Amino acid sequence: MNEILQSLTETSPILLILFKATLLLGLAWGLHFGLARANPRWRVLLWRGTMIGLLFIPAAEFLSPKILVPIEPPQVTITPIQTPAPRPNFDQTQIPIAPMSTPSTKSTLSTTPPPPPQSKSIPWRNHLQGIALGFWGLVAVLFAIRRLQSLRRLRALLKQTETPPESLTQLGHEVAKNLQCKKSFRIRLTLEKTSPFLASILSPKLIIPKPALSEERPTDTLGILAHEIAHLKSNDLFWTALSKWVTVLYWFHPLAWKLPAAYSSACEQICDSTAAAYVGNSDAYSQTLARSALALMDLAPNQGLPMIRSSEISKRLANLRRGKVWGALRKRWVASSLVLGIPLLALLGSLAFVEAKGEPALSALTGFWETDWRDDRTISLGIQEEGRFRLSLLPQGGERYADSG
Image (cartoon, rainbow, N blue to C red; front, side):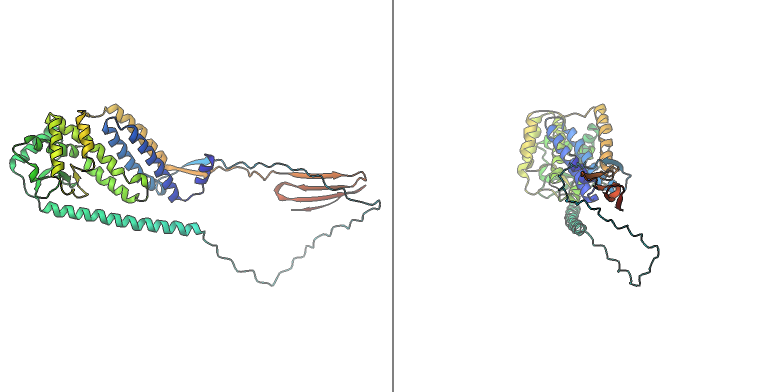
């Protein structure tokens, strides 16, 4: 574990952002599967917090002050090795030792010009990071263009919608009042073969296909209105659009690819439960959902919030058969989650790993080797502090040494 943290002290900010995002997404998916049978509002809260965290992490890496976490460097262990030195064959005559010459204090100026300064070579990984960043930006721009094209198609569809009868508008306002939704919206009718969906964040519009409305089945109209108004009350349209833009930024991360689907699934489960409770009969609303799925030929535009997604319809019908009505979460539990989650996100985004400062492991290393013979001559070899080298030859009655620093 210490080796992993030690590597984070030398990594680039981009790789650190990737590490933090992976940690956050991994934790979010673990909680998502752990809350599979709990109130889906917990999963909605979970993914909203995850989206905020994924946007906060890169911003905090470059803009916010850092909380420095010192990481101890790996310890260097030195095992002394002792080897017997060969016994030199000294004769009995005194070995003359020439006195060491004193270096001259006169300085001479060299006429040779100094070598030109060498340009520092840029590490290859800096080039690699630049290429990777450019490739990420190119692909992100392509995904952003795709999202903008979906928005353009949605606007074209909205221009072709019609004004509904006054009775339908009044019914929609009545349903909104009963569901305690205070946000204003407009109902628009379309001839397109699509599912009912909510569109436009700033001026919400509830788009209903004309074939979905039938005077013979009034519960269908009530169920559609209750479902979409439940989305409007919970601000699901804004968060759904945000989840798709988050995947544009994190298009390279496999754990982010299914984030919009996971969030939308939890939202649909809540709105189905709300609509079934409002209609008063889960079986009746299930039939409404099934009829809408059978009549569906084309999906709604990506920027909208469709009522029907063919890949999830069987799962939603199975949830409705259980007859579970998911109420609002207790405020104290939500407050406790926010008190715990917000500081954790702030801490994760502001953490910076640095190497702990300390004395070098080898600065105080002193090694010494000494051999003593019977003829009272001693050769000593030592490695002193700060890399000094000492060689001493000790004959009888005197000491000569050479010391280089």
